[in-house]
Structure formats: structure tokens, C-alpha cells
Image (cartoon, rainbow, N blue to C red; front, side, top):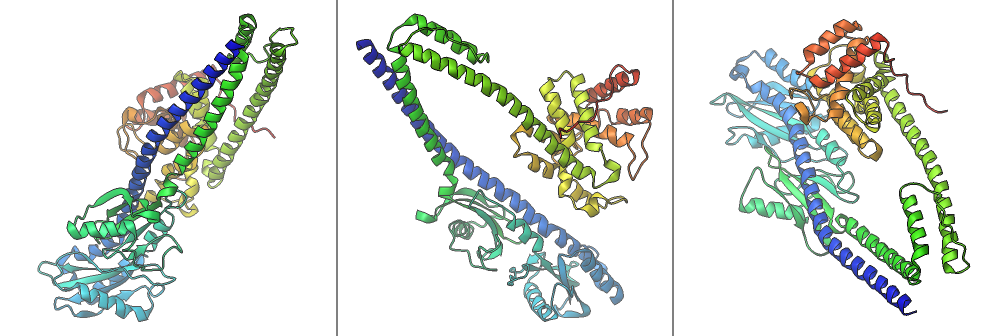
Length: 567
């Protein structure tokens, strides 16, 4: 009985003290780590949104500035001036009005144009007044305060001189609809949000329904910090991340000044929401503590008997189970507690054996379900274009064959097949007018098309099973010499799975009929692959493809059969 009590108390103390100590240390370290991660994540979101904001302004401003690149704009005949202004309004939907002023800052008759569908005639005078207010002392591009109207997209007026010394001035009204949509779609955790304010803290664009148009947000913690910092030391590249506010209004946030107009992008997330993971971790530690306490009690009851021989049998059978040999039995004929334990152990082992069989079946069903989903997603892309039907599955087959040729383990070969099938999944996010266009894409359309790897990577990212395939989805258009996209990776910095899928994708593009080419013969396609070897494609991967094709041509390796779905 003394041994029973000693072991019981020892196991209880060891389990409780060690678990509590580890839990407290982990909680302390992890709280600090999660706080820093929340701040870093907020900072990254603000940086990304600042880039999107700058892009939303850059394109229309560049289109309008093109009118001033020729100092002789105001020397052209009025008809040519009107044609140039109308051309900008026609080509850029985000440029809604343009007004020309002479060197004395008087509006030039006949040189005011606006988009009838976007700017009511009653607002043209307001646009002109805002433009005229920008002309005093104007020596370069200048932005007016943004204008927000209920139910309408915000706008901003810009003005700039033409010639040096100025022979006149041009002003344009820019729609911020694209910026508003970008900010509305920005999510910050489960309860946070992002928005853009001007230099006085007034709302330019923000989450739908949270603030009224043009609302004064200067009292919000992050904005107040921003304005105070700019008042002390104006900095066009100001960026800061941290905790702002006090009491119930404390937030984890970040802000960054947008170059040009002097606006700022702000991100906020309530401090309590940012620490949700900490509370979850506390709950798990408590559960672990209680589980450890229960284990300590059970172990104390078992080991207190001090019977080594039965324990050795239990240890041997437990090791069998740990090695995956479920169903191992403990032969112990006894009517005491050890006998009951033996029977319970044997029942558990049989249950584990049954569960193991069920889990293997479930795993196979789950994997088949993943495959069905993958093929369905791939077919949804291929079905948009008859020229690419079956392309995704062929790329998956070729990728798997190359991976096997390179000596990759079979699980990685299987993931290569999935990666090949999914490599173009991001085209779901590309509009059909671009995806199915039979003519050569414009530069703007090509820019949109080149977004599909990033879109595809974001689609695949939540699926843990396809984690390795995400690299191929995102980077299969990277080139060996670094001239690819979306990140411009080069050489072995490109993930191997992406290099393999990119090679398979290029091969299938050469050997199938497309709107812009007929299918090439194998020798001609191999010549193309050789020219791309070491430029766009990994030489080792191209060599592996050649060996695979050589064996298939010799009949030593038949082409992979199409993936079959269970019905």
C-alpha cells in the first residue's frame, strides 16, 4: 500500500507541476510572439494596399500627363486638341472630365470634356472650380481634396502645367471606383478592416457601410497617431505599425503614406480579436493539464502494483501497437485488476485494428474526393476553351512522368500530378472575354492574364493536402533566367515542382493545336524545348523529359492513362 501511495503521489506531482510549468512558459512566450505576428501581418496588409492605391492613381494620371509631354499642345489646332482630350476620356473609364486653362488661368473655350454617363453636367462647374483652385503657384502635378458623394464612387481632381514656362494648364477628374472596390474587398482578420484617408483624416475609400462617404476619421486611434506624426515631421514615405488607442478602443494597426496625393492607408483590428489565438491556446493548455492529470492518476494506479512480469507483456504489446501492428494481445489469465486491464487492453487493440482499417478506407475515399475536386476544377477551366480541353490532365501526367524520371518519391510524384492538373486553376478568376480571346492580347489584357498564378495560389492555399502543389500553381510561369512572373525568380530559387510543371506545360502547348498555332511534331517541339533549355526551362528537367519521351517512343514506357473517377 505504501508503494501504491508513493507512486500515486509521485506521478501526480510530476504530471501536474511539469505540465503547469511548461504551459505557463509557452503561454508567456507565445503571447509575445502572436502580438508581434499580428503587428507584422497588419503592416504587410498596409504595404500591399498602399501599392494597390498607388497603382489605382498611377494609370489614369499617366494617361492624362501624356497630353503634357508635348510642349506644343496649346499650339495645336483646336480640333486636334479636342481629339487628344477625347481620346483620353474614351480610353480611360477612370478619367471622367478634362478641362484646359490658358497661361492666364482662364478656361480655354471648347477644351472642356466630360463623360456624360459618369459626370452630370451640373457637376462640371464644381470640377472646374476645384481645378481652378489648384492653379495658384502650380509647378507640378497637384491633387485636390477627394470628393465623396452618397451612392457614387469618390473622385479626385488633379492639375498640372504644360510647358516650361507654362503655356497653359490641364486639369482632370479621376474616378476612384477601382480604389474603392479594392479597399472594400480588403479583410483584416475576422473583425478588422482597412481604409484610405486624405491628409486631413477624411475618408477617401473604406469598407462598405462602416463609414459615411467623406467621414472625418481623425479621431480614430491610428489616424490620430498618423496626423500627429505628420504634423511633427512630414514624411512622404511614413510607415508605422503597432498598438494604438487606449481602453476598449485599443487596436493593432498600421498606416503608410501614399506617394503623390499625401493620402494614407490605415489598417485596424481590435486588440482582443488579434489575441483570439492566445485565448484558444489557454484553453488547450487547460485541457492538456487536465489530460495530464488524468494520465498521472491512471499511471499511478497501474504502476503501484509493482508486478514487473505483466508490465513487460503490456510494454511489448504497446510497442507492437506503436509500430502499427494493431490487434496485438496480452495473454494474462487473472481475475484481479491486471486481468481486467489485460482484457481492456486487448479490446482496445482490436478496436484500434478496426479503426485502422476504417481510417485507411476513409483516407482512400478522401484522396479520391480530392482528386475528383481537382479534376472538376481543372475541367471548369479547360471547358472555357476547346483548344485547351484536356490540357490540365496532360500536364499532370507529363509532370508525374518527369518527377518519376528524376527519382522523386511516389508521394511527391502524386502531388506533381495534382500540381499539373491544378496549375491553371487561377484562370477561374480571369474574365471570359480575355481567357477566350482568339486574337493577340493587349498589354492591359496580358497584365490581367498574368495574375492567374497568384489567384490560383490563393485558391489552393487553404487546402493543406495540396500545400506542395501551391508552389507549382504560383510559380509555373517563372523562367530559369529570371524573366518570368509573378515574382521574377531564377534558377533553383524556383521550386522544383514549379520547374517540372512549367516544362510539362510548355511541352503540351507545343504539341497541341491552339488558336495561334497548329500542333507541332515531336522533333519540332523538341527543338523548341532545346532552345528554351537554360533560358526559360531547367536544363535537368528538359533532359528528364527527353528521356521519358524516348522511352515512350521505344514502347518501353506507355503514356500514362487518364485519371479515372470512382462513380
